[in-house]
Length: 381
Image (cartoon, rainbow, N blue to C red; front, side, top):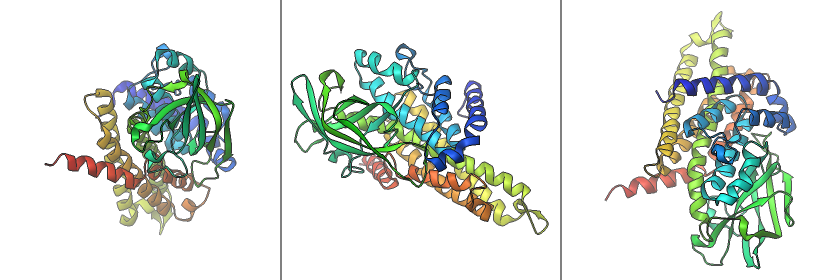
């Protein structure tokens, strides 16, 4: 209903890559907590690092639905692959492409779109997670630029990104107009990367604390106008939430695919367990909820590209529903597989662990409900 023949051919290409090249080493990457640099290079060759950027700046621009299909298919095999690509495109590349000057786009984007380098987005802080407006990192205006002090935490791609978009306060005022956005390059003086976080899931993705200690950011690396950072990252998160929905959908689809195959072939009491209603009804519920989640995500992707209005509510709905459906589906998949689902013999336990971040990152489920409720209540006089 939503995708064209061209998009389904693209899906097939990404699925072939994920099954053929990522799947054989996905478990090892999870165990070693390291994503293969070769696979990043291969994803670059496939054009997956520049999907939200026009060719003028080195990108391989595709519509949002096509991009979402890519995230979904990568995540079906490996949640770490999906979140690396989602964070890079939606949170790292897109703000520069959307809010940067012509000079900034030409300077920053080619390296991270077709140059094989990754990007990241520094928003969360120890005291500013759900309360993103509570940013404490401060950028003091000095001659020729800004002197930045503070830290960011739980930054996906933080230790492997060459280019990082981040937010900081530029005045001591309490309102959101005090927040601005900047770009910093890895290796900048005064910018250091903390230890890698040891996580429950998406363990192959690189998650770090970022430190700014009198880090000088030139005026030329201010993204947009001073005080526009809050508005920028709210718009960025709208698109990012669609990609996290796709991440959850892909992970859940992967677990479902394993579970239904297992149910059709694994026997108990002399027959496939899929013949028992207790299992068949689980599969029915899983399939129904996956389809519903897919419709919400694809619909929000289409709304984004239509550009007729803000899609904040739909993006929040897609992210909320898909992540909670994903948690349900991966759990049910484990139950269908029984002890096999609890073991590393099948990828279901890894997918179940990978899924949890979808209910937390880019706004918790509680924050999504807050966003949705505020917006729907505005519609009623």
